[in-house]
Amino acid sequence: MALDLIDNAELIASYEHHHAPGNIWPEIPAGIRDAGITDMQIYRIGRHLFMIVEHDEATDLKTAFDKMTTLPRQSEWAAWMDSFQQKLPEAVRGEHWAVMKPVFLLNDHLQ
Image 1 (tube, rainbow, N blue to C red):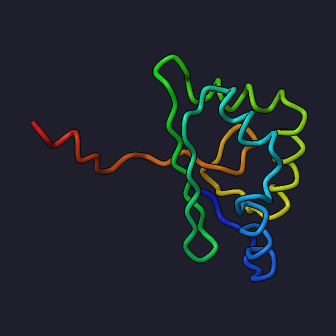
Image 2 (image 1 turned 90 degrees about the horizontal axis):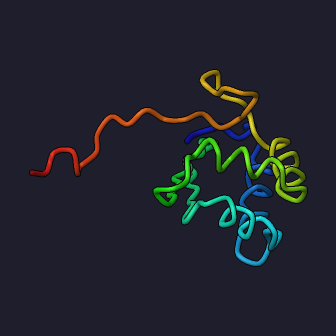
């Protein structure tokens, strides 16, 4: 998934600060795991963010994110983080994050 942050150095620094170990609310990683997501990584280049999400076979990604929106602290965190983010035109369902289309997957080329 991808999104852009608002092009403001102070906001970007604050966004990174709030995601640093010890700064994220403990309910956030717990809620992510409870939704069936086994790993989540966010990378930044400039104001562009890229999220890699892994989940177990029994979990549908849309269902996992929908479940997280029902958790009070997750919703509060998401609303707060939205204030740093700029919605991509490709984003759907009122989300800021847009699902990226795979272009190259190494395992698809290995026999």
